Length: 124
Image 1 (cartoon, one colour):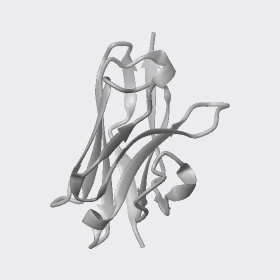
Image 2 (cartoon, one colour; image 1 turned 90 degrees about the horizontal axis):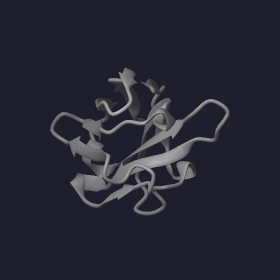
Image 3 (spheres, rainbow, N blue to C red; image 1 turned 60 degrees about the vertical axis):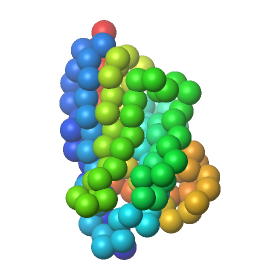
């Protein structure tokens, strides 16, 4: 069982930056691939970024490439989402998720565990 708790969301002006954090409670954190998803009001949840086990491969949605960086610290059981150049369309609840799967990281059905989400609001 993995518990995930996101933090770091808030209100920021367009062009600003935020760093989201996700704390995982598990003794096997390094064995999980980690992903970030987001859901805007009235829209389906969408993939943002993922990072493989042991800090391996990363994958980003086209809409965030060049503006968002995912990273992990296995010693602290943490995964981060550094966001810059934020746009109003980035406004959403951001969710952290964990999976043991080696594939399909862009699909939310691949993930076994989810956090409760943290709100990011970007004002124009």
